[in-house]
Image (cartoon, rainbow, N blue to C red; front, top):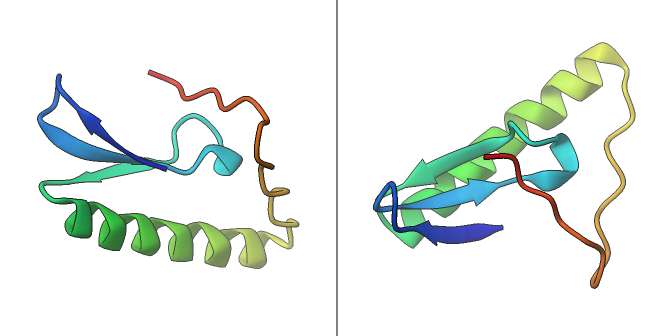
Length: 68
């Protein structure tokens, strides 16, 4: 999920399936997307190393809670 933050004046990327602290940001939408992809790759690698299953994807219409 990519959203503009008036407070930070940046695009903020949240990966809610991975918990409230899984975010990154970028100056542009494209930069935020790249950073989000990098974080997602690192999270997947870490889950694999730990032998943990990946979180279930959120479905359309399910509530998304993003930590502040």
